Length: 325
Length: 279
Image 1 (cartoon, rainbow over the protein chains, first blue to last red):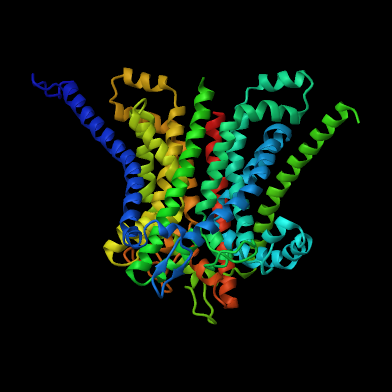
Image 2: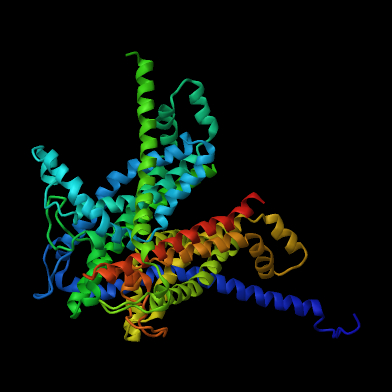
């Protein structure tokens, strides 16, 4: 240790500690900044969309939300058609995806033999890994013709004279339209809802389930009276999460929804969604008002999904808080 | 029918429905992959990897789109992964019990599920408009906004799994905190963090919506970060909606390549994670 300079003021361990303190401060700063950046992005998105949408919001006011016109020639824009299409496709998707996801989650957690659980979970998760554009392409070239050749004519024939359903299940059986878009969205959100439901079902204490089995309950009765009440916040959170996904899904819907700025009660008619309108028209929009109206659409979508996703997270956080008790 | 028989019947019916829904879910996966194999695998040849995208009617491949996709995905990962890992580190190490950490965690989860087309719109407003033109860099930045929340979440979860005793033991030796984190906690959580990055790459390599308004597309072989760049998702989008038969074939080939690459990455991520779980 003779080569260490032993000045009275700064022995080596003090120097070292200073270097450590500097490193600490730097590392703390860098990681903290990165964390703050996440907040900055969310706030930045809100501000930039608001600035971009400002001219359109000033011109149309709240009427933007309730007007169904979309006319680049006269520069008259309203969001109603796109909002309607977004909500209806998501609603169809949820009507199908929620029961299906529930069934899959039930199978994986309660029914499946142990060796089959992992492969099935993985396969369902792979559905989420397939990019949106692949769903779109498959939807356009494979699923839409299948719908128009087999499913839609049959549905039209079957429900033609049923009072309420008859007016919903109507429109040209061309395969392209709101109905097909909703079905494809359903397939796309199934893995997300399934994953949350599966994870929440797994946290139900085994003792609770075993007690009711011991009382002679059937599997279904255990699910309905023990598992569901115990996990309801998580289940609703998962559904909201899936809804958030469905609302903002872009490419798959763009391929099959038909890009028509009309509202029809019949589900087989082509329509439009907010995301699909943006994808189709944004790069070709000329004129400040056109661009601004499209950004205003984006803002509407951002606000809707922000609300839905925040609700989902709050519910899921409540569940994990309950789990920690 | 006795009450007991009725209960058993309801149970059997509902359990049958559960099996049916599982088969229903798997059915779509099989149908999708089968379509890709039928339409895509047959048209793969050397030209796909060596020649750039053709004009309609000419022969060509996807080389520029493949390289472009690798570049944009690479830029997105290089920007997004470090930020996500650092932010995750903050939440797991420094932010414990702080209000700000739970706020960041909440909004990170929102960002994770936010519509990707909105991210594209945001990057268009702040990068494309200020640069004056579309660029590969803008595309990469848009994709990085998807990588950040994903890696953040996985990094935080994985670092929390590392036992505090290990941190305390290191601290007792007088090691500065940042060295404890970088040399010890990172090493213990490494396989999890790598998994997060792989899943991030898998997630963004097929993303189209954020690229629509940022990287755009390019018919030519351009590898300039500050110019529009060809990429597989945009080529698939453009070619699939074109009226030309040979463009459709190339779109299917691109779809096949991208999907199976992503599936491979997903399976790789699971393989990487596995040893740390059992060990």
